[in-house]
Length: 319
Ligand SMILES: *[C@@H]1O[C@H](CO)[C@@H](O)[C@H](O)[C@H]1NC(C)=O
Ligand SMILES: *[C@@H]1O[C@H](CO)[C@@H](O)[C@H](O)[C@H]1NC(C)=O
Ligand SMILES: *[C@@H]1O[C@H](CO)[C@@H](O)[C@H](O)[C@H]1NC(C)=O
Ligand SMILES: *[C@@H]1O[C@H](CO)[C@@H](O)[C@H](O)[C@H]1NC(C)=O
Ligand SMILES: *[C@@H]1O[C@H](CO)[C@@H](O)[C@H](O)[C@H]1NC(C)=O
Image 1 (tube, rainbow, N blue to C red):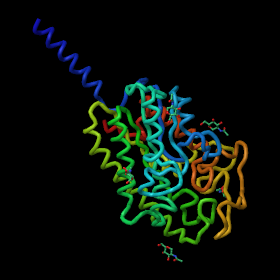
Image 2: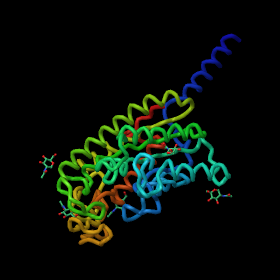
Image 3: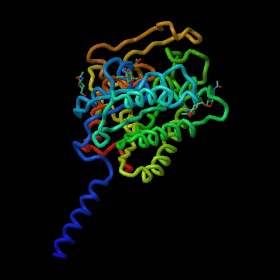
Image 4: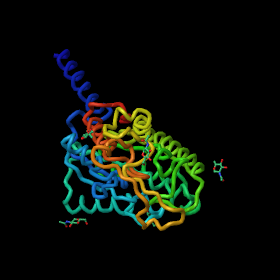
């Protein structure tokens, strides 16, 4: 009898342990709720086609609830831009829909993603010193980590935090960059590229430390740090593993590359070179700032495989 009780206890003990293991179980997640900027905005089509959350939802059979908006930063309090930021727009909409019953999501079956930072660290924000005095990358990254806390406090239990890509390799931020739809002002492209490399790497390192500190405090939650920086570095170094178009593989140019004159209005069309048809899938970048649709197909598939625990390559489950 005592033996049976002990066996039962041991079995229950191990079941409890399994339930608390890092990361959700394969097949556990049914809903994907996305926050972020143009990289994730399903209505913005900033990759010239379908963006990654739609591909992830297709691949992983998730129901998609998209909140990301083009141009967004984490908070307009920190880096003011005339776009719907995560804290002043996306979260308020999410909470409004949650409280009036439009959204009814079982926390166990729902995962929340955030991919933010491109605009926070970019031109017209930290890169150009356009933020209010005293605001730094420490604040913009703290804001992104705070998204996890706020969502957890509201009942969310599964998270994927996508860090910043090596933006210094996006055509807008390379030393070889040219005046483009996002920036035509005078600038030192080498200095921009060097500073961008510092902002993305240091911001990602701060995020990792903060998330590792936070994870043990979020009882019953699963929090994954998705290393977009490493994934895009791998795409840059091994494009043949990701790109499959009919033009020579290209990680420096863009599907839709438009050259402006210095000082020209960014509202002008510029002089564009466009890849068409199956050539498009040879490019890592769609335009000077955004990944291509083929890059997004890859991100979508990898995120789906990550959430379903088929791949651990680009994620660290902190809880
Ligand atoms: C932004 O500023 C407003 C007004 O000071 C404040 O109420 C709000 O909490 C701030 N939001 C964030 C995310 O810091
Ligand atoms: C719930 O709130 C959202 C966001 O404000 C709004 O669009 C929607 O119409 C509301 N639905 C109901 C049933 O009140
Ligand atoms: C541009 O920035 C780089 C790196 O900071 C520097 O070495 C170079 O002298 C600058 N060029 C000009 C023209 O100021
Ligand atoms: C990459 O694409 C750009 C167009 O944005 C083009 O100018 C460049 O020659 C291409 N590079 C290669 C290696 O094909
Ligand atoms: C490249 O691969 C994707 C799947 O990742 C596929 O949908 C697309 O059609 C392929 N592109 C070409 C030009 O074969």
